[in-house]
Length: 331
Image 1: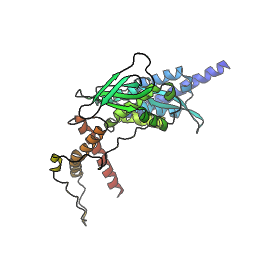
Image 2: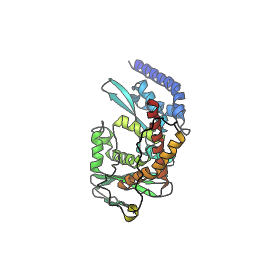
Image 3: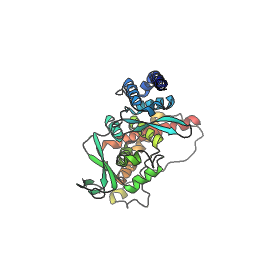
Image 4: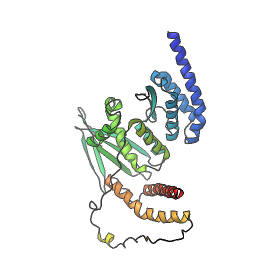
């Protein structure tokens, strides 16, 4: 019996190695230059040899895990990369390998994209000294209690922008527990065994949200995490007209927006893509940047005169152009 089990294990390792070698070209096609695809497969084989449950995962889910590593630029090393987690799918009756990015892996993705230069996350407990202020002069103070710190109350992430400016995101227990309830694994796994780490990961995801659309590797990691855990951080709510403060005198002096004419023309002009982009760029620069600033201010971040606004504006512009071209193709 023992020899049969050993032979079966050897066959599984051989089949997995063959499948991974065949998938390397596809992985290289989507992987960033800094990621060594052959190293990813070797690390995964090593992890599978140490954890028999990983070896039981289907070949399909294992290959999908590797593609997730390639798309996100994260190695299967756990801390600082991604975790290969065996998960029993009750619908299929099979063990599947889940791609779970570590929160430090998300930070590393943002650093490689040069969106930030550094970041870290901490949890706050009820006996700690903790307070923060937002607005034009944001500030955060945290002094952990020396002995009994008590229950978790908050989590925060501090990150440093390329110009050296420090920003932070804070979430309280109600916000984090609301996200935990929406997770398909909210009542088990790391939410139970490593609650503090999951609080850190949740606030890191919130802190990285303003960079959505700027780094495809960071986007891929977050999307894979959504698929695996079901965790989603709600987008920052935009203020309504009633919530906006009264206009200042300087704002009141600005000329009103030019209304868009809706007159119909019989002859449709030739599509001028360069002209359309130029017009959209003008609108984006004037309007979207203001909306982004409002959203950032609502979150406690001040991006006034920060180059990040331009990068977000470019991302919005690119998506807008793509949607316009897709609509035009359908007509």
